[in-house]
Length: 79
Image (cartoon, rainbow, N blue to C red; front, side, top):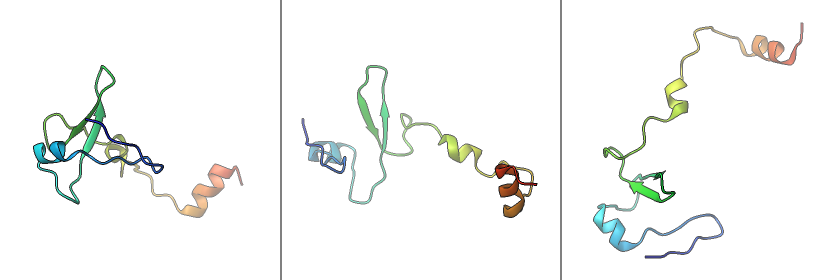
């Protein structure tokens, strides 16, 4: 089954695949690349879906309260 990549980098998921995964407009899907370099599409919440987002895992971890002006001065090397 083939599809064409648009100039915006978008593809249409073929109808057979959409039906097999019970995908409807507005559904969220996950993509991964397996060891052979094949792209795999998953419905979120399935066992094959990728783990937690690495950025989400780090969100909210800072334990120092910085004021924006103080942080910018530190980053810019201002005294």
